[in-house]
Image (cartoon, rainbow, N blue to C red; front, side, top):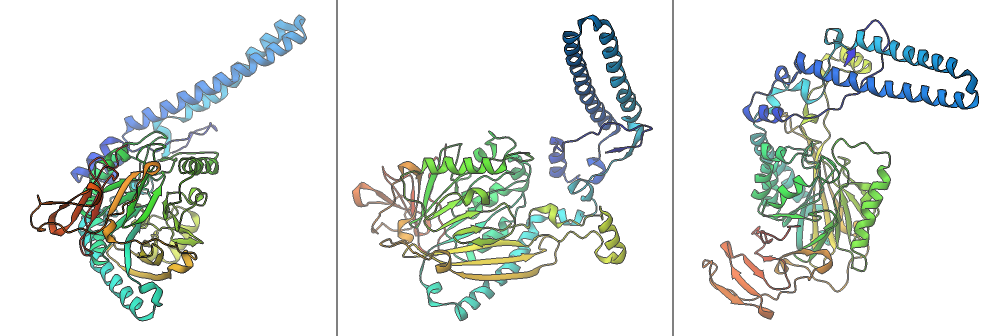
Amino acid sequence: MSFDGPLPAPGLTGQVQVRDRVTDLIRSGRLTTENLQPSQEELRTAIDTGVREVAWKFAAGALVTSLLVLLTYAVSRPRHAGHVVAAAAGATVLALALPGASAYLTYRTGKVAEFRTTSVLSLVQTNAGILDSLSSKADQGAVYVTNLLALSDALRQEFTPETVDQPAAARFLLVSDIHGMDQYPLLRQIVATERIDAVIDTGDLVNFGQAREGELTGIYEGIESLGVPYIFVRGNHDAVSATDEGLLRRMAQVPNVVLLEPTDGEYVRTDVHGVSVSGFNDVRFFNQRSDDFAGEQAEAAQQFREATDGLAPTDLVVTHQPYAAQRVDAGALTLNGHMHVPAIDGQHLQVGSLTGGGLVNQFRLPPLTEQAQEAAEEDPETAGELLSQPYSFDILTVGQDCSVVSLARYSYRNLVSGRPQFDDVRLVNGRTLQPDPPQGRSCGAELGVVTGPVDEFVPAEVEPVEVSDPGDDDAATAGPDGVEVTAGPDGAEVTAGPDLAGVTTAPDDDATTSEPEDATAP
């Protein structure tokens, strides 16, 4: 907010917040530029609040400074105390009067020269078509991405080395930085087409740290609809304060969600077909400003290392920030998001943004800088176009010897705006990611999915057993060591025993979630 006043005045700093009524407007379909602009009364209240804060801080500073000078001089030259008091009082009045007059004459609603909003606030009206039917556009995009998957499968069969084509024990879909966009119709298609066993999300599910954002966009229902475990760590956009766990509590209510750190300092391990996964949340929160970002991340990594001290590293360790991920060890790979750009650094794997950074990156922006304005004049066709980062996701395949077989990386853009553009498909040989595969281990679907506290975890060692007719949901057969094996729908076998938090084994073409209702509770 800028002012056109007669005198220079101290600056004002504003902090952006999302009001509750904005989410109501989204729900009702009445989100327009006009009803997002502040009213005169709101502007006046904001200005008055800012001026009062500036006034008392400035006055307190001037008075304290004057008193300190007065006290020092009075102690050193007590005979001149009267003159000192008079001089200090005059200087204080003068120091308060001049900026006070400037503020009084400047900070008025009638003097506001410009109120400019950027991003979502000013672009909703211009980009109204983008906001319509995001879910249906995700369905449309699923067809496009399915073609990419088919293309990559054909290329893989034709050109990849034999080590990449060994039988898979588990296939993980890696996503990150969804930022409030319901792209789960697309993910459902990927899960079904690529026979995914579990999804790993490295954080930033929403934008402003509010759990209700996911309610408005249908994200929680979308996650549940995937039908496979959804392994999650919190990102810096998934909380509103250092102690806020609202999104984690809401995610814990989704049956197939596995929280790797359901509450601060309590870590969970989950084994998917024998492939072990652990991780920890980001300690940052939405709109946080910190002078010691590196120290915070190092401390979070240190807390995780202390909690897992003496335990064998899990195959995969998941967190949001790359700085933290590089400070922990994993048996195979550490995974992080946050940067919106896929990358590989040794055994550190950075997952790109599934949605190109969220809806705001799909908007056309007005030219806000002088350089952008000059470019707009030279090429009006692209004036203000914000080229979104590519959408990207990864498929990680682990073999029956529990080693990384391959990493397939997909990158594309412009699904939301209706202009799909293919960017890149890459297939990385697992031996370049994990040069030293584990020895003496075996992984496979018969091990199911097991979840429990990281320091009390007991891996599954379940031998295949015969069960009753798969069509009879109530039939049960005794398994080894008293473990009960119950035939579920579609022939899925759900086993549970005293040492297991929850195990699911299923045929390769089934996607069945294993966690019991309280498996991820704090």
